[in-house]
Length: 257
Ligand SMILES: C[S@@+](CC[C@H](N)C(=O)[O-])C[C@H]1O[C@@H](n2cnc3c(N)ncnc32)[C@H](O)[C@@H]1O
Image (tube, rainbow, N blue to C red; front, side, top):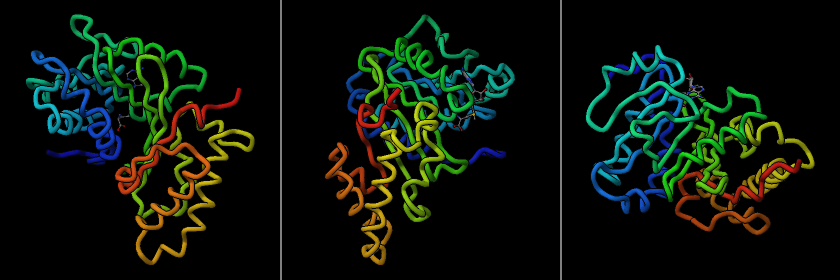
């Protein structure tokens, strides 16, 4: 299909993490009508929703996706893509889903970055309050072609983790990811704040791992993350480190107010 100006696969890293981490929950969900996922703020074209449907269907073939957009013109433009298991509705953080259904997944990519930071807690609370039991909200930001992504994962109770993901071949240094921090963190990347200390330490670990660079960026990243994990509560999932990801608990990076 023609994708116009939208970059295909922009959210591939985020979706890959979702299917890995949330896949078991999706698989366990009751049958008929199957678990529901929401692509909140899918944008000018519905590609990210179409891609989310395809990716989630690899782990749960009867999953359904509803794209929710605040812009009615974007809902109208998405109509030709409506098909069984894929629909589009106009709405915002209140998620006006048919029958008041609660989704097992909400993915909000590059949406909250458009808002003032003060709006984030209420938006998170509203969205978390709409999740089904065991549900997950993934809220984050990426660059135009998805090489750098950072997202927060939240359960019905609130924020759980922060994940940094990069295409390693094009990464200069880990703090390059700072420009893609979600709204809740980006204004706190200053001395004295935990996220700033984390990225500083990550850069130091990356520099110390430079001797591994001739073996490839992945080897260098793996050594840097292993060093980082001596001082930070990095999730011990080495297979995810290999994908160019690092996840830490939200509490390790949460802004000091
Ligand atoms: C930058 S686009 C992101 C598109 C897509 N999610 C992506 O990452 O490529 C942000 C979209 O969010 C929509 N949006 C902004 N606030 C929203 C809200 N409260 N509820 C639903 N959509 C919203 C905008 O209309 C816009 O289409």
